[in-house]
Length: 91
Image (cartoon, rainbow, N blue to C red; front, side, top):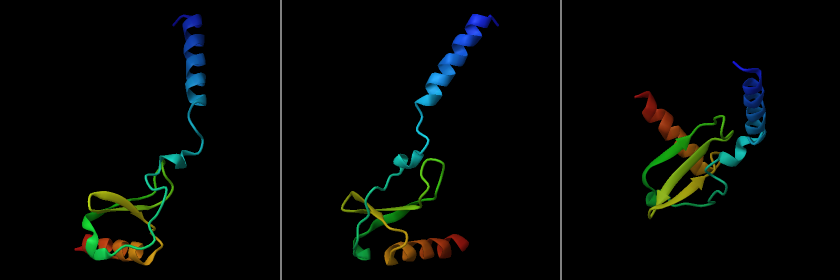
């Protein structure tokens, strides 16, 4: 490979790497959590997203009247949802 082309590719690689944020927590789906929800209003199965490289937090997403809400995994409802998931997952 030509040395000038190699240098150009290295420069492009460095410039593109600088544009990526070091903290990827802004990729989380849940930025706000609801405080109280009537469990009987929840439609369908909650979506549970485990921590990943994009978001370091566990996220629980529910739907009420076709609106998406985030539940705090440490709340009573969040713990109940996680417990039910683990029970049904073992069967």
